[in-house]
Each structure stands twice: as C-alpha cells, then as structure tokens.
Picture (spheres, rainbow, N blue to C red):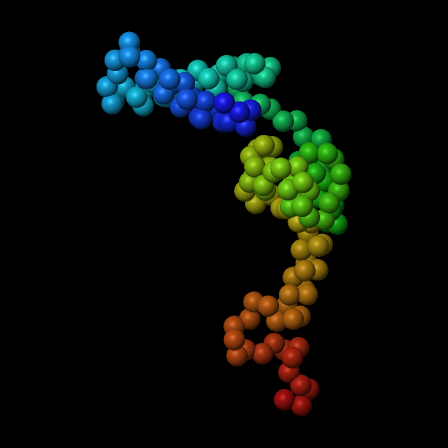
Length: 148
C-alpha cells in the first residue's frame, strides 16, 4: 500500500486479507464487525506511532489566542502562523486547509469570520454601488436622475 492510503483503506485491505485466508470462516454479518474492529485498532496504533495519546486526537496549539485573532477590524490574525490577513481563504488553501477544517482544528464557532470586518464592509459597499443583490427591474436611489 502507498503512503497516501487512509486508515479506512488500510483496514479494508487487512480485512480482505484476513477474509481471504481459507482457514477463517466468517459470515456476511461478521465482515462489518471485523472491519470496524480492524479500523479501530489501526487508528489507535497509528495515533500512538505518531506520538499522540491513544485516547485523544492530535491537538493543535494556536499561534495566538482566538480573542487576539479578532481584535482588529483591519485584519484577522491566523491561528496557524500568527500573521495578519485581510482574507484567510488563500492562506488556508496554501496550507492545505478548508475554512471548515481550520475551524474544526482550533475548535472555532461556525460563524468565525474568514474576512476582516473592514474588508467585508468595503466589498459590500462596492457591490451595492454596482447594483449586486437587487431584483431585476428595481432601481437604486443612486442610479435615479435628480429630475426623476
């Protein structure tokens, strides 16, 4: 198996090898039990081999506190490297994370922002100015002529 295989793929391979042995007799109902047991054991072994505690998942320590990461309206400080960013999405993508994975890694709320407040307000103002978000046929107050 390659180094990129997941624990599930490894567990499936081990289960298939065990079931292929003619000396083992297993019913169809036993297959899921064997697979779950193999996966659980393999996950614990991999976690211990990496140096983790067998009872807990890998813990990530943020570079700054969550409160400090949101102190400024002009930027959000990354919990990965402690540097300020107006938008975290590109930074996260460069580090191989999605916003959901980032939030899960540091146990953040679902509404934890990925964009600074000032940047979001500026983008909102631009969008409103060009008319995004309006229904067709409605005119904004800005687009009407003074004589109308």
